Length: 284
Image (tube, rainbow, N blue to C red; front, top):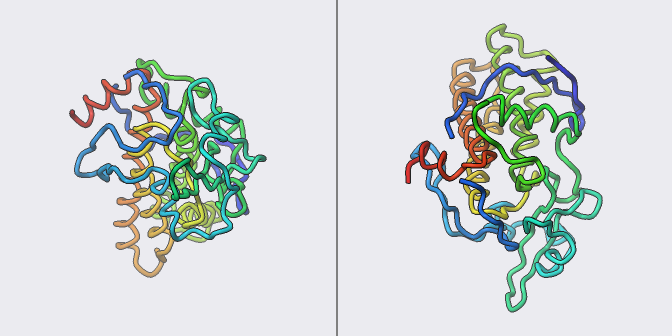
């Protein structure tokens, strides 16, 4: 099945051809109403290691360098009272200024964070990619039952903001990588689909493209793998395959590996026995 979905300023085509290799299989812990501060899992050497750094700074790529005008000022308490759902996740609709400059009582620190469930331009506060129910309907099953049919999964409503954002973003990126591979095989780098894919990778790699803030310990690990992937996507998009096909092909393999690492972890985190599967895959 193939379908066309608008992406900001360009169009991309998706299919259900597989890129992700299915991963084998803890119930998700009750979420704290505060952004998670530490990751509770360490991955293999192929993945970025977790740290105890402030999560909001992790997700907004160091708020010290962000423009002072980015985000609506709020306190964490205000956000909890107005936007926290029954699981404790703060979820702000896209039409209600999801990027917030968050301060906590007794602290001078202000963290700029995205509390929507999609990647947004931190200044315009709009999605940087397609953000439709149709995309979710295709992408969420792909990263759950399609990959490991025998595993039990949480519902969309139970997923964290970051998990939801990664479902949408990684699904688009996966198709972009398939299109890129086709272009490499046919030596056709002039097609609109290839150019659209490179545009998407450039946009996701931009500093202004902000992922949702972590609100669960595993969100930190997922965010780090995504940051690694989008960096390699940006590097791929910056290259001219016509000038150096060998180097482009090498970078493509890195971009694909980084994407697969993030997609594999996402499948695990969307399962109801995520802790067991994390241990099976990455060890204690």
